[in-house]
Length: 434
Image (cartoon, rainbow, N blue to C red; front, side, top):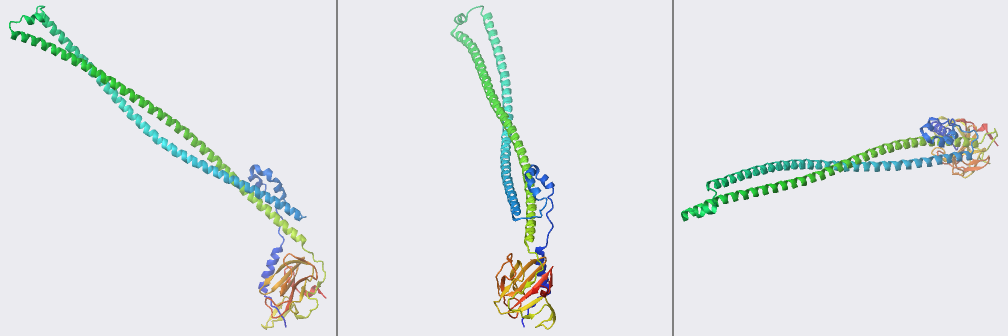
């Protein structure tokens, strides 16, 4: 006797999975208008999409789905453009930050240069002050020399007056020639020469001192002028550096303002992208709902007609629907279908019009086909040696869908035929008609 065993736990999981795939979901709700507010000025551009998502129309068509898929494609394209704009503005911000950093480094160098210039100015001021002090001292020395020369000049006049008064207006020449002796002549001559030499020396020293002091004064004045020019040049450089620093600081402020603007733009772009993602998700959800509605609308509706026997000529029952004694375990067990014995390769027919929802292999069922006939009614064909249809195929009553075999948990060639209604197994004899 041919038999198959269907364990209750596995079958329940299997049917729950299949029923879960076809459960109706609620329609798509209207998109919250706050989404449009989040998109800012782009709300007007997105309004058609928002209106399209406000409700899923009852009459769903492939064209309406294609239209919404095109809207999704357009939304994704716009999102890509936003992302590109975001990427560009981020690069611009990075460039501004780099320029700002370089400018700050340059300003730091300028600050160092300005500090050195100010130190140089301070040193030059000290040197100029020193030169002014030296000039003052030289002026005092010149005045002292002039005073000394005047004193020497007065002394010379006194000596001349003395000589004149004590020679009774006799000339020096007469004083020399009136000497009583050669010795006196020589003495007189020496005296006169000494006075002359002394006065001459004093006069020369006076002139030399005055010339030297004037030269020093002139040199110091020249050095002071040079230092003053240097100081003026350094002060001018310092002023230029200060002006440049102020200009660069202004540029830094402008960079910072520009960076803040870019950061604000980045935040707005990120908000737009987030809103776009939400919009796309809502639109994709709506399309999935419409696809499900379209799929459900295309499912057949069971009209109550009788099923065709899944095997044309082999109608011998090897194991019937209901409780039975397991042929190997010897215990009572529920059998959820009818087993028809037939040679391997015998054609298996669709019992009624419907859509194939599964055509696959299972360790228990072997190769199997499951057909949805609408209104919660399904038929299952197990242990086939070959499958001739695939999931999604539409079949009519009597179409060949598989061939008899002994795959899965089976002891011989046979067809296990089951019927499910609203998630529960029912007797195939409620629908079969020869």
